[in-house]
Length: 292
Image 1 (cartoon, rainbow, N blue to C red):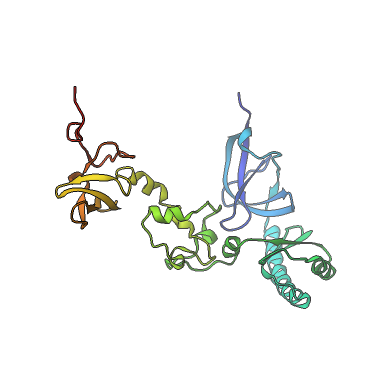
Image 2: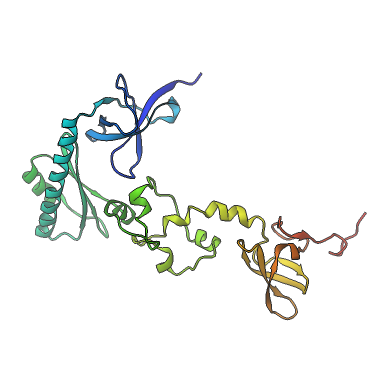
């Protein structure tokens, strides 16, 4: 029998990843604050799932414990830390300018126990920031970490509005970045103009992934582009598909005219790479084959 553990899911920032902790003797429910021990020190987080039972194999070992349920005093300390982070950000900007480093400061985080301050930045390449770290450490008298992040993480931290007019998915609810490729835009018949399919981070929009699986499933009802078909007007080659209208654009063999037909009007010629579930199949004798 697999070992089952009782865990609670804790999130440390809005739209951040959910990490699992052992609640121990603490009674916790979604929405409660929790003080937990993490790899970078003691942190304040919010319970978002649980308590629930999971297999030990589904949890990243070692499973750390919740130290205690947060109190009003803990929440006030969190607000104080946020004010310190704002001041640290301004100091960080000044120090970066003093050292004339080609880097952009994006955000600052201070651990709940104030044992470490993390400065997040973006840069085109590797930066030698050793002197900057020493300078910051002399100002704040605590451990300093500078962490270089990518443009997608920058957009997640800063936030903003997408081309749809809504607040960025990554800064509101998207906890993980999925792999997005140009093939997804092609699959959905979108314009391949980079300005129309890229987010404010300059990368392909995450939302291209959302409906991609539905498009892939829908396309199984259609033949491949370039497949040979028989239409009411003669033979032709599939030039484009429209899954919403359940139709195909076919370039006719004789006239080279491109006409649109519904799937049920099309007969797929024998021996094509992909069968079209929405099209009729050409009979074997029509294809010039002998029947037994």
